[in-house]
Length: 373
Image 1 (cartoon, rainbow, N blue to C red):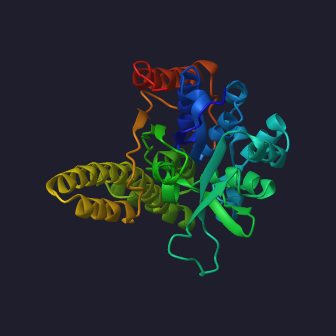
Image 2 (cartoon, rainbow, N blue to C red):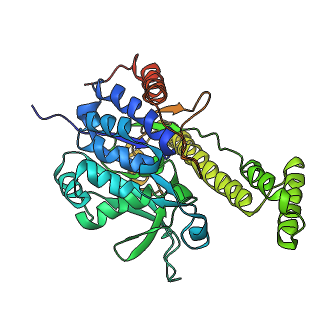
């Protein structure tokens, strides 16, 4: 018996906390009747990485990989002298992924042959100034993209651009897809095979980038205050503290972090808002169609009006309402993040808490789900 594949799974970005919770979500989804019906997975950033393993039905391998993962194997701090040129961190994740799963191009080839399609999102930062209106947003399908390029796209989508430089993906330069579409819900609505959407949306709590990291350096330099450059630097730190106390960005990095937060949170919330607007429009259109046809007594006129309704073209599919289940997860307490100079250790217990939370949140939504045949 051939199983109908009509479910679209949407995985948002969320860094290491998000990917841990996505693992719990995927483990619970795998236990549901929806798992064999998945047609396509849409993932951004951490969702692209977890989506690649889920599309291959390798959730257990994803779990083993994440339990082995440590900060220095994801985003490794650069030396201070390299910061102006290479950013805060070195992108160690591609090497780590390859050590675990082998050549990513081979993984992409396996994805091309898998029954589940994977679509990942990246942000186009190519400096050619020749884009169409929407080309800052790059979409790559495991079915349509050459495997070598698709392998690059998955890693580029997960390259947190606040930490690392972008990557080359085919003829484009691309980075973290969270800048343009952190929660690719709209792509699932547009996909012809999708009749039901199941999604995980990570709700982040962004850390403040104040002056705390500068305070130990200020204490060490205080003894050299008589030197003019040191005195000037300490005055800058004092000014930064004063700005932070007023609620202003303490420094340029703090301002960039705030802008990133605004961009990602805004495009994520807009995704669900637009989906809701489409749902309401479709329901109202369906009701309007029924009322108009019911008011027409002449069969020939009714048939002509019905044909006109059927021929109407909208920016969305008007012949169906796509139901969706959205699991929303956030960290309670302290989460896992890569450090700047001192890398923390991610314990198995901390990881398990996040995985369990993703599982439990998914269970609340899927536990009572009645799935039609």
